[in-house]
Length: 356
Ligand code: PMP
Image (cartoon, rainbow, N blue to C red; front, side):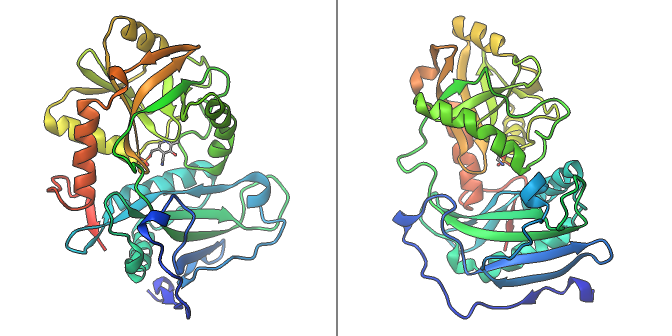
């Protein structure tokens, strides 16, 4: 289809690629970006790859006022054979549309945007770093662009994909983090936007994050926004517990983001024959189980860290030390298996990776 032809305007200059030691998260961007626009009469149209550059928007553009926007995050990995692999990108396209639905943004053609994403990554292949643990972070996002101050869904949108080479999350090997159980602020509420990857959820999380950092913790454990009793997520990750031999994770209830890593962990555990269940988990259950010595492991899951073991939970001032503050065997096995599938050093029984 003519409308779906992706025009490519190449950058005349090339930026210098960073050294491995300069790589952190999301500070350096590649030479090109993908763009596509939406209007009511044309639908999603004019897909193009252009030089990475600032965009110009009307100050009244709705994104600035009411935050009607969604985003995604996934990674491309370089294998030893110099192939570039994407990890479960269809899940991210699917989730982008789930977020769109919640935020009243018109749906995208998932296959077409994935094709645009692949063409962009292919053009920027040299930007995919090769050192262990490094990757090319991919950020698709959609903003509302109509210049209008009425509170309503915008009539025009722009979708963009930008790329950022990122360093290893674990510079000194997989390391447990200290977590503060947040009893004051909440991230999401029942019926709210927690299940969508939308900016407001992250704006709402900053205050608790800042306060927990001041107390020496790296992230907060979010409880539900109604009773402040049931566990939802940890920082911007999903959470798993191993309690008395059973692995449990909070069931998706509408206020929890359905993580791609969460889904991968559940599939892998089932594949290994390790019992795993999705259910409501209260903070009281964790506290009581801890007192009985049943809490064997806690870990977060997400694209950034893959698996992030929790070494300590601060629960109302009491420090609950998990597995002697060390990484547990399930967290370690999951981390190694998933990262090996991502970088192509282990068979991929679920066909999770897609070569660019
Ligand atoms: N919860 C939140 C709030 C997140 O931002 C993320 C990161 N996308 C996750 C969970 C983990 O999701 P994923 O495994 O898809 O990265």
